[in-house]
Length: 169
Ligand code: ADP
Image (cartoon, rainbow, N blue to C red; front, side):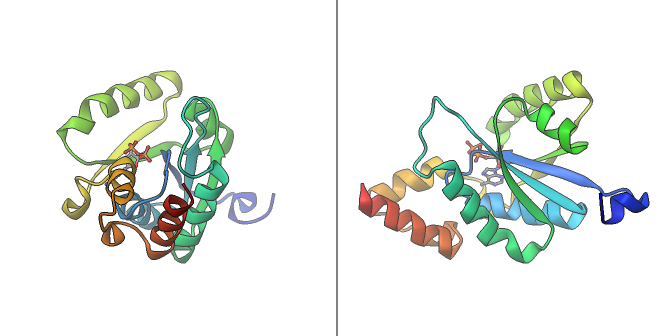
């Protein structure tokens, strides 16, 4: 091991999990805010074999890497299985999630309590920037499929990839 951890310095880590199909400005806002609070932010792209995405997991990872590169402390990986195992393997004590509206809260609370019960990992909720409180990847895809302008809701590279992908379908 090299770097600060080998010298006994604690590296404060958090994870932002999700499907990111594709990453939106709402995700990016939460990852950026987490990156100011933690030394390293892991972005974990969930692999869901039963749900085919518009982008492959590798494409999502590439896009996330590209648009988070400037933060300087974001690591992007895929994961399969339980998020608490991802956390345990990398010594991550905290999950950071954005809360868009009260409708998010019920499910997020259950997941946070379950994850804490399973492994002691904490979940921190960050209130969404109101500009993005209605924003989800699925809504963006739906609007874009019918020709609606979503360019203000996505980083430019992601918007470009989305337009290209929809054109291929
Ligand atoms: P969704 O939860 O919409 O299916 P993801 O699984 O990709 O989409 O989202 C992962 C996490 O990112 C969510 O649980 C939430 O914490 C955060 N997130 C998603 N969209 C937004 C948004 N518009 N503003 C803030 N956080 C968001």
